[in-house]
Amino acid sequence: MQHDESGAFVLSIRVVDVEEEHWRYVSLCTHVDEENPDNLRAAELRLKWLRASDVKTKVAIDGDGKPLGFIHVVPIEAPLSGMVGRNFMVIPCLTLGYQLVYGRRHGTGIGRGLIQAVEEEAKERGFKGLAVYAYGGDFWFMPSAFFQRLGFKQVGGSNIWVKKWGEAEDPTSSRAHYEYKPIPGKAVVDYFWAPFCFTVCKEVLNIRQVVSEFGDRVELREYRADDPEIAARHGLFRALFINGEHKDWGHEALKEDLRKEIRKSLQGSPSS
Image (cartoon, rainbow, N blue to C red; front, side, top):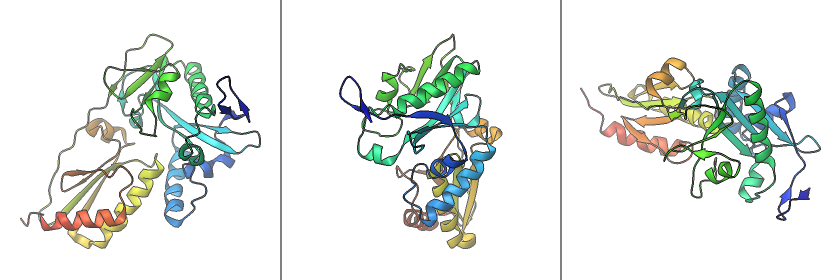
């Protein structure tokens, strides 16, 4: 460990392309100390998809080879970018080990190293910039202040931030479109998802289990956001609707919350 000029501690790290020994860490989204059955099932679903996808993954490791964080990057044309545009690579996820996040350990150099690595990757592949959805306030995931420090600029008043090294028109957000189609006598659960995200993988498994508990009284319609046709038609990366009403708890939908909402929706479902 060493310190920078401000006195913040900086770890000695290397950034490498994901290798076999890193997949457990990446598939569990750094929750390596929480190997409960639900997490393991979600990680298995996520890992199977990641291995077969064209998502580029890079991992930050310390001097002993221990993973400290990872980053994903995709071309903007990929369904999971959530954006419309050209000449950009998009960062859908950058995360550090949770002991660093929860401990508010800033200035480690891990995030900066991961960004530098994907910037080099994008330049080598002929792209003109990086783009990311980033958020202000105290929201810990993809904080805009971090990206701003690394030279990213906000696109208008949106949550899109970009860093350019060539001529490229600013990207825009995918246009979301959802239309509820009721089924007489049933509660309807519409879920837009992709196995890209660990939290989403946990959520879809929760949804499937809870819906199955209600038998034929509930209809589950899954829409895969990594399908280009579905992405183009709906523009939704992750969204849960119960009888057309959007549900968002700020974390994965928990089983008891789902049961409660489905019971309520069954009481109000049309009978004909």
